[in-house]
Length: 336
Ligand code: NAD
Ligand code: TDX
Picture 1 (tube, rainbow, N blue to C red):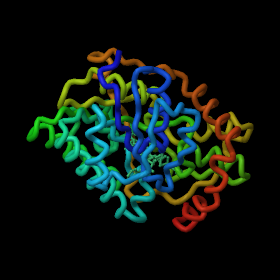
Picture 2 (tube, rainbow, N blue to C red):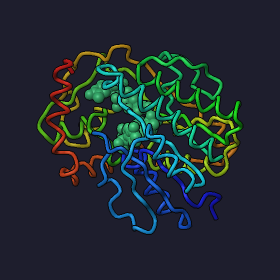
Picture 3 (tube, rainbow, N blue to C red):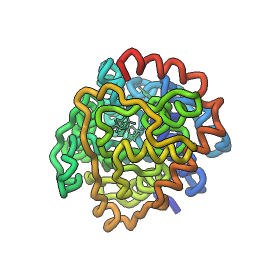
Picture 4 (tube, rainbow, N blue to C red):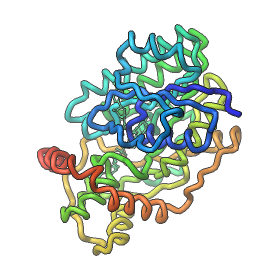
């Protein structure tokens, strides 16, 4: 039996939020989900298709709307906060919506949670810790100092600080999780893996930034969902938990794995302009989560998870085709 019976999931029509909603509906039969999502360019109601009406209510609205929150939050017993502007490259071209949604939106949600004494779980990212050198023997832990590099990661770091202050000052029952790079179905095609898959399907060369040696620590989004649920249920109030599945790979390795899986030569791609301020390496030590809450990832083979993800984009061209030209035009303008 779950502790929380009626949860508010913000950003539930996005990539990770929708995967989490599906995970809860499939694994926690006594839980009802209220999704609050503004349906920005990154949100898609189709991501929630197939969820029975009696398990989920969808509310189209903005997390910055304090009046709307005052109406919704008293009806739930926990908030799982995914909603954000999430793409680094967009934050470089225009940081404005990042400050609004990630900082002000989190503030408004915390205030609504405080007014109702509601359990609050905040979804954050490993990017708040900045980056590691390729040869650094250390990985990020819960004790690593914050050192964000991009407008995106600095707004996520700011939101984490607000959550910590609302716990310490007001005693709000909060937890934070900082997860590594997710992959899986329904990720927006502006992001690295789906961009390259949909490029290949469209006959466009995949695009690699810089020298291709930047390392990301990949986790399947379903494993992110199970970890968030474990923390919501069993995490200690005021604590932070890092989520990662020991999946470090450099971008060149990932791109070659995609090319190979899709039957292309491994040098069939283009080098493009690097991202300004590009973080070199992320790596997560998730010992605390595994030890305290007994969590382990299910998707331990990246090659299998990647093959399933490629198959999903091949089978669901309707889902991404209409946004492809605009995404590539924007990248072309930035020389990428
Ligand atoms: P996404 O961009 O795919 O989805 C974001 C969702 O939030 C969309 O549905 C969008 O409509 C909604 N949204 C945006 N602004 C809103 C607002 N003002 N009010 C209500 N809804 C709004 O993002 P994602 O990749 O699924 O990331 C979800 C969360 O996970 C974010 O908080 C992100 O920082 C965090 N995260 C992502 C990754 C990753 O690899 N993608 C890794 C670690 C943490
Ligand atoms: O076309 C590309 N070519 C390329 O080489 C794109 C889009 C990206 N890259 C590189 C940049 C990064 O080193 O691939 C790597 C991954 O890029 P993104 O998918 O943009 O992810 P990243 O910047 O690492 O951030 C992601 O993980 C942490 C999510 O987008 C964030 O929301 C999350 O917090």
